[in-house]
Image (cartoon, rainbow, N blue to C red; front, side, top):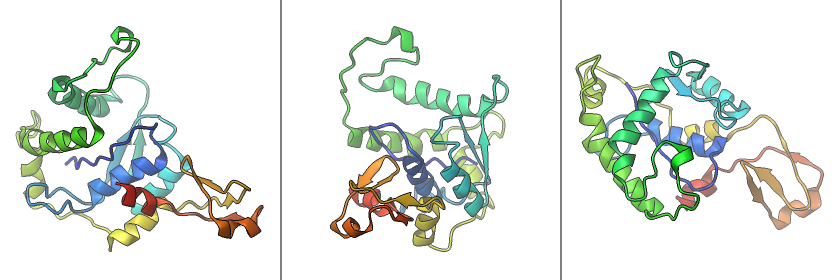
Length: 212
């Protein structure tokens, strides 16, 4: 059973933004019409550097799920392509400003027409009203029916425990004059001034959660 998670962002994806999407998929959503939750058994990803990074490998090991990178050939990528195709045809194609999947046919200059907050709200409504309620051709059931039929999700002990697992990296960071670089962000504090050259393990999830 698929349990969609999302984390809208405008820069390029990173291991941390992927972790935040995974966090959203795992934890309860706090609404009766979206019961899907739980740690997955498998996560299928393409071969983007942010998705097959050391950090994501550590997350999969800590949460005990299989991280399955795509392989060459349409047969191996069928699961990913079906999901992308469903979202593209069933949701994205109806949005203002949609430019289509063909990069070569897109205009040279594209002006955004939909605020990120509105995109997120609309996408969530599509997941709840359409995706979760559309029967799968193989199973004959909707995702909502499959999840609520004798299924017990595997959950972390707490949201805080999950947060620590998602942001922890075993590789320490060196403190430079301009701070610590973590997940493409630069963190600066006066307290670091006397520790230039030292190594430290940094956690950065709270900043993004507060910003979201």
